Length: 208
Image (cartoon, rainbow, N blue to C red; front, top):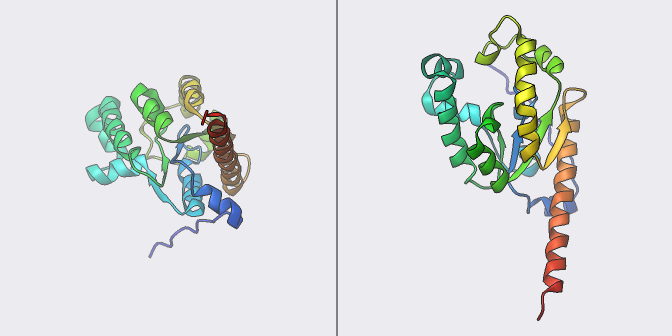
């Protein structure tokens, strides 16, 4: 029997918990292997929200693997399925969503993510990513003779797109994932509190 992996929960104060009740959906973007699913599960457990991985959702809906979808429908077919899933999932509430590495390529995906939640970019180098993904055969784009060159090319294209929609950017791969998740929680708390202050100021300035 396969043992379920333990998912740590970050320690937050009762005051922080009260603030985080007002948190928007959290959407994680970044290249494959950046840790979106691992960090996302920690965030979801800490926030007491649902966690969804868009790639896993596509697999569940189609009953097959991402590699098989690429084989029979090509990348274009997969991106169409991905866009439909993201459009639907971002209409839900109380969730943490880990997106696929190529989700930011489509303008409609970027719009849905940036307009319907708080976007976090998990940023790391291609050199780190190639070490994390070198034994993973489930990633069709990396089944090449030179995965590092592929990751560098993907990074050059996608890095500006991730940054264009990110509300917060955090470096991953250099330490424990729980530390990354804690940085995100801290930034989210600051984001919510700033919004509350802005709203309070706006209400105060309105003429009676």
